[in-house]
Length: 216
Image (cartoon, rainbow, N blue to C red):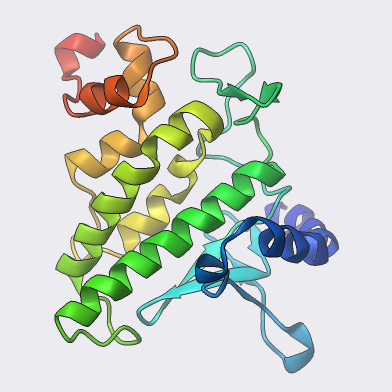
């Protein structure tokens, strides 16, 4: 059912999203975002939920789906009166459906992650097109998550949508506490009863993950 809903939406807005990423992304990031060409027999990417996208990026020899506007956000969609709702630019950003600005943000995050990985890989003679080097990937992921956490917290609330994908690229199939804290920054701030905060405050908050006692 999800596939049947997602496929025509992805097909319909595929040209529009191409225009938006060309407009919004820096050339150095845009070069990482690829588009499926069905006329050449290439198949669209479908994730574990059945969500379809025509866009992807490659980290090592793995394809990472780049979600288009209109994608259903199972992992991070919240109701508008929730304390986890992210209000920015005059409206809620993390509802059930991925909007334009948040789709651009996720595309940029993925591009920055790959750029960071390839830069670190080049320093240690790792093949950037081969199997993903686990240590290099985890170092790159930690760096870019911390670099993007505040923007996600304050404007998008969408990085959590990539949790399963990012986790699946590790050998351990597990993210560490610091990485998870960046993905769940809004939740941690809610547990701590912190409203809108500045970057420095958020960094302090996510550096001390709540334990079960604090959550209860």
